[in-house]
Length: 350
Ligand code: NAD
Ligand code: TDX
Image (cartoon, rainbow, N blue to C red; front, top):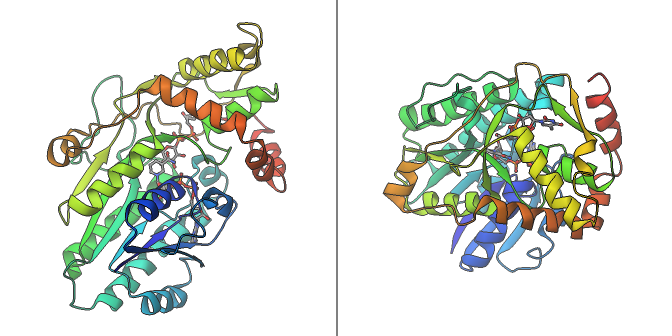
């Protein structure tokens, strides 16, 4: 039986990855290592929590001693590392937490893996989940490829870039078997409503203003979260040790076009007059240092490992909207407590 530690498994992408692995690999023991920050929610994993090959361990990756203890106890064959502070706006408001979790936390995990594995490195793997934001911002043309020079421009992306460098450095210097993937914007169920899609779906539903940063002309490349989880599965099992793989949807949208499409779908689902939800669009002060365009070239992953996105965007968006509309209990739970305080603080001066 293989043991894999998945960090950040109670978050958005991590919960989808855990669901995939626990169901697909009954002979793997999956350890979900998560601190349960505001973004971590065990309700995301209700359907797998009783599975015999799943275990949750509450821990902070910034606590180095605790990481050694956990690795010593479970003797993992692999690590898939997703735990991170992940929201760009929070990194602008308060960068320090991003340095601790994303840089120090990643280093603690690398040290724990190194110490536990020693020179028995056969079949061991440290898989680091990263973002396309490490490559910076594109102009009107071109795509990020795996060899694009790093040019991070927010505290979030700088902290993720640092963690990528550390993973590569441990591979190069200490021979730690590692692999990295850099993915574009994910969308789907269980995403915390601080990110564009769930935040706007929730606001449209509650007839609240839709705060569009700047002119809404920034471009993002959207990928269905379950396709990201499938890509991680393929890379974990078939990727070349030491390599990097870009993951993306070839699915670019300006924010404003995407928001208008969401409004249109929701008008129809909520039996509102056509155009009603678009009235909620409010242009607000731009995000500081707002990256203009991200676009991923994932042909290496497609050509070498045969992965392709499974869902057309319009279909995925509709499924996603349906999920949030049907999941009031989940949404009410995550938007109670500190959420309103966060919202007021983040949007008050825009
Ligand atoms: P998320 O914010 O939804 O979840 C992060 C999880 O990490 C939460 O469960 C949280 O409790 C946990 N965590 C945070 N700090 C921790 C700590 N110190 N110790 C232990 N656990 C901690 O994030 P997400 O959107 O699911 O992103 C997961 C990973 O994928 C991140 O590394 C992110 O950089 C990367 N990524 C995200 C996207 C995206 O579009 N969301 C795209 C590309 C890459
Ligand atoms: O209220 C908003 N208004 C708005 O116009 C919010 C929250 C966002 N936006 C814009 C900013 C971006 O151009 O929408 C776009 C998407 O914003 P986010 O959902 O915050 O995502 P982004 O900044 O693109 O980063 C995301 O993708 C890459 C994730 O949060 C990262 O974790 C991932 O690495």
